[in-house]
Length: 219
Image 1 (cartoon, rainbow, N blue to C red):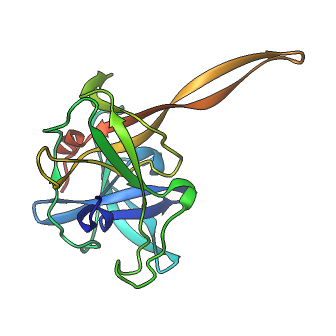
Image 2: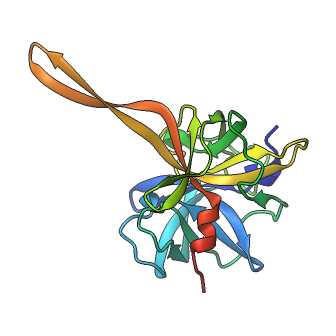
């Protein structure tokens, strides 16, 4: 069962025309939003930005500083918050305990869809979709960063969302990564009108390890 300690940490965000998912993360008693850099593109490290978060059925502007990983291959960012926007439910951020063929869950807002906060139990923030996947690999190196692959069906809008698993012999949830997106498969087709190609969802999900956050320096 996916509980409030992760459900209430997940947010629908927008930067200019780009929409995606983000989640809260604490460091040194400060709360940050974590997401993917392709939802916040063309920005410099430590740049002040204005972005939006969906609350009470409308977009609300926030300001913050974006912090990037030194590797250009790391598709993760942290954004400073002036105050806490989610409850400080205890949750662990780690890859310890991950196992091949184990169950994983990821949360986000596919195609901008969400469950409304009808009874204002989540401070007007919409609740995310939850999907299930299988852990296919552990800590594979892609270029210079650690990547985990899942077997599952990811959709546009989940990018930036958290991936979680249950601790062995426990119901405690652990955040082990950030959804980057699905691995595309290019299909070439011959037809009477010539050759053309299209991209399909391979069913393989690329997740950037939560350990990458340790490499992001903040002020």
